[in-house]
Length: 303
Image 1 (spheres, one colour):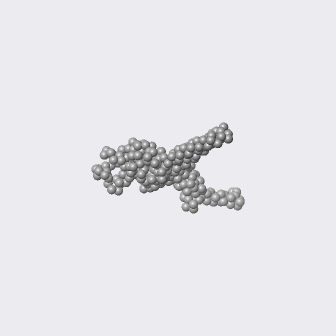
Image 2 (cartoon, rainbow, N blue to C red):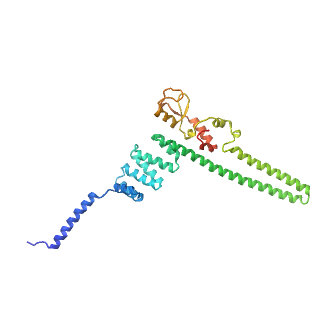
Image 3 (cartoon, rainbow, N blue to C red):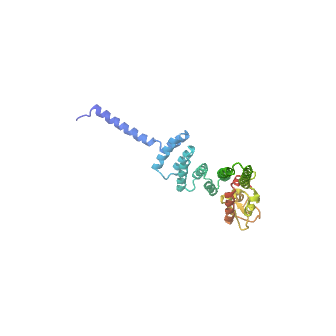
């Protein structure tokens, strides 16, 4: 019987050993999610994202893969991608605490405060007040920017009108020639005209702001009620609620009262639960209208 050569035996043995090691390697090879966790612990967020992405390709039903990748995106300040992953995670599991938390943070960073506030109220998170304050600050900043633009436009209009007056002055002076009396009359009339125009523009500024607040004397009567009635501007977030007694509360405040003190009206002391609360749309619209024209108020806790 022919015996196999030594070379063939060695090759066969080497192949066997290779396949054994390959099976062992495959058995113990870290999965992409574990590698992602490893990279995340090392603050290597880009490689962690790659591993979590690989894990998602293999199994797109795992909520943790999306929330972990969302966290990496947040660390890199790639908030739009973080929001997408959080929404997918919530789509897979509407009760994912991590998904809602990361989504709320990403929305805040993207300055999507209204949506972040709505999410916070739905999830009853503790930092809803911070979101609300950020929303008010954002509205105040937006109003300030619009106010600066308005003042600049008025300044340009004033320069234009002043230029027209000076042009007319020059034409009239040319017509007056050497007649000193006519020259004096022209200068007097044009100077008076410029003074009146300047007063109009100055009065416009005074009507808008007096010491950082609107001049109440120039505010419509329907707004004076809002100005002198003390209430939290959190109402402007479309979360104003009222109940059968007609008393209006800010949603977060009244719900906190229910949770920490008891389910009763803080003023009338009558039994009251969340089911008894009704959105006060009329007040919401009034405040929104007021803030649209008086954005300075968004920066104040009370009026």
